[in-house]
Length: 317
Image (tube, rainbow, N blue to C red; front, side, top):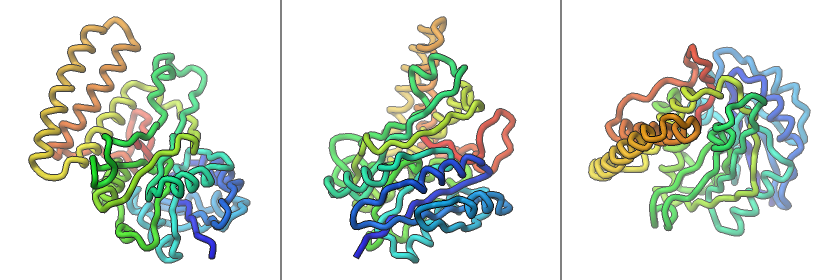
């Protein structure tokens, strides 16, 4: 009997979801697998319904309206349908990305060959003309996953993944009923915390560098301020990797030392834009870790009205 892979796609007021669905329509299914696509619309009104239902796809596409201006609500709505279908696997992709025809094939092949429960792939940025040179050269907008430490899962440091490009075993697992945290659904980092939780439950992680997806970087993201806010939130989310008081204290001490170091280096290279911004953004990340250790409130991102062009849909790191 063929195994089922459900592709989970959450959207919020993005016309680019049509381009994402068009690329998903051309996916090749691995031998012995079937594919379906589940789209959750997080807008207050079903604004994406016509784009989703008008998409001509090779695979069944289901649309669900999951309003709340909270991305976790949309993710959980997708998972609920996948559970009802007894999907063996679920794949995550964002509504501003396009995927190659062999994307799922590569993820499944890696999962089978490594006996992994979660496989991550890179999300590569495509920069528009006029992007600052330092931003392109340092490639701040791409997401290159990596495993933490030598061990994996509960045998070593806890692992995580990001919803921009990931495959996860679902049916019959210990984490089948796990949901995304609603409290993180307006701030971002809900995917980081979700996969950290799976790691602690014994999920094994792997990386497939060949399973790449591609994202056009929006003009409003080509700002140092945008990147700073993103890095700070990433640091806050990363703090979820330290369970318990003592672990958070140790992480906070390390983060503080790194903040001080980055601040010193930033000041020393102040006249040089590329090097200055590199160390400034590293410092902001560690500052976010420090804030996360002290459980300081995270900024609202999803559904927020922000005056600097910060997108309401995603700020994953």
